Length: 330
Image (cartoon, rainbow, N blue to C red; front, top):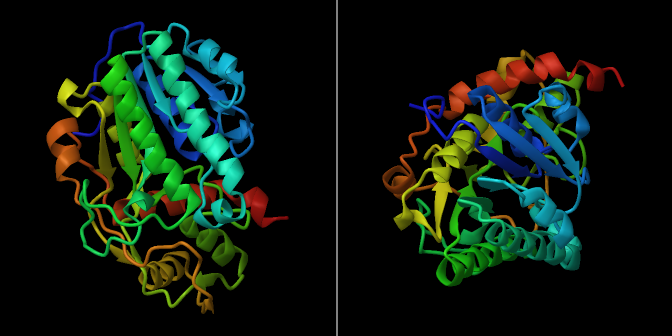
């Protein structure tokens, strides 16, 4: 299954916003490998030029350095585009609590700019990144679309607002929009550095350096960790989704559940180290447990994730071993 069999018109042009970031650069790479054209838009605030350096000589790849908060930039980026994969956003629940105004401007206004530019340029399908954070304090597991709770952070609010704006653009203007609620994505090119780095790459880097990682809380929180290949599949299948999927949002995960403490000790074993973690305070705005029901995405998008957590973590560890050498020598 996967996505490598998918077919688009020969001259199809994809715009990937946030294309120099973790998820965006993987999307760029996958589309180029399928033989289609890619335009990457990124302001390099969180994305990195090194993530796209391998594509820069590819004649099917174009890079625009620009900000989705600027409407003229969005219009220029959408010109002649068939499919938009809108990944540009600032992540991190704790950081959003510290910077609510910026998150509103970047994650909401930026997305609305992109929706409007896509509409005006006749884009076929607008696929955008939402988040499992929209489930808030809804305690039920697994998480099912349409059963959301109170939002627990400005970040979660921006993602729910994006979903509502996308619905408006489908309802009033006929723009085909598909929202993808990502559940804890991990894999190659995910940044292991910085205060807000995702937990898996941060643990891997610290363990490889011989440092003691900090686990926020007791480690008994659970997540539906989702390998990047599954996310690529979801984005590309969403481009080809039937009209009945338009205006909807979908859980994108593998559909499993892993406890953080188990992942930690699994990584120490895989890396051949014996280092005990430090336990810190719970993070503000975090949910305790997360696990996705992916039936809706299976039914309407044809989503059939191939990569279990175990298969994904093996590949991720190998990638970090190969690519973290420079960081480890600092």
